[in-house]
Image (cartoon, rainbow, N blue to C red; front, side, top):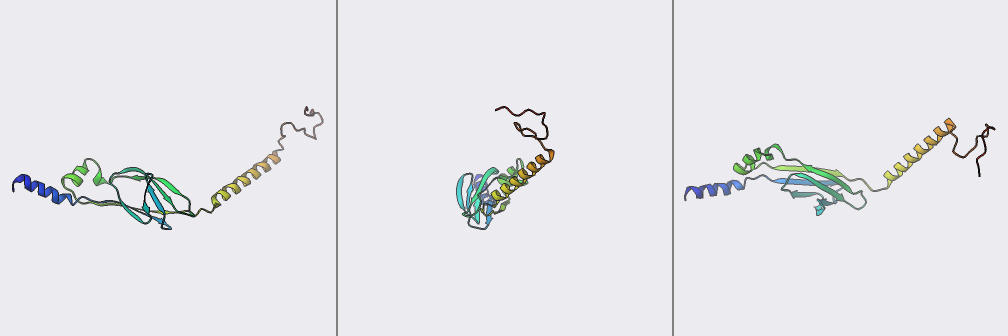
Length: 155
């Protein structure tokens, strides 16, 4: 076997040392459908390999719970950034694994958030109305009964 054959065998042997990139997704409660970049990939808990870093779109769906959607930014670790990655992943594959574990707490879909927002809106409206009464601001078109000099509105 010549030098080229030995280099080829060494490259094949070292090729098995490439590290894994794995995304481990879970939810509380479990059993949520998972979409990554608008593609259904499984149900939590889920282990899915990934090839590329960057921004992705993550969505979880479960009956009785609000849909969870958020951008998922997968930043490359120091050993997977240029120019270091030339050595750690190509020339001397070190087999460094990158495992990202993400757990999402799903919120029950009870409609309570809308109820709370409505109650807060009504409290703010009542407060504004009370403040208006304090300042005794006349409404356009109404005549102040205490001021006889004020002309009556035209009809």
